[in-house]
Length: 127
Image 1 (cartoon, rainbow, N blue to C red):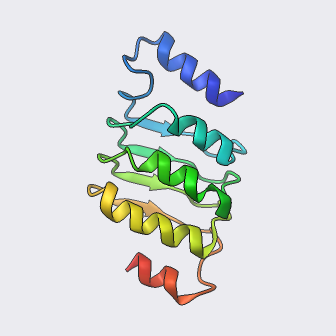
Image 2 (tube, rainbow, N blue to C red; image 1 turned 180 degrees about the vertical axis):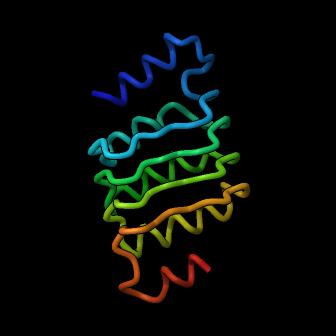
Image 3 (cartoon, rainbow, N blue to C red; image 1 turned 30 degrees about the vertical axis):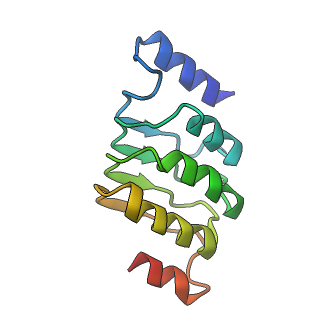
């Protein structure tokens, strides 16, 4: 699958540590599911990552755990785009808590068209 192709390309390019030195990843509109995110998370902390675009994929509420595992190792992340994924309030709420503690440099977060706003707690988590 394309996640394995991405990992192979990073290794062929000579990126030491696979994706650890990659600064920008855009996987928008690729029908990515929680399995693909989990595969990325298996690579270990992506310490060099500054922007991650996972917009318009198939990341729903069940993807929250895989997203948390992936984002927990991205302390230098500046921009995260999850727009167009059916995350829902609970997953977004959990992600906001994680981002606050594990991604202290985050400047941009896009959650448009993620099915948010059905409850008050998500809005409170977003501040």
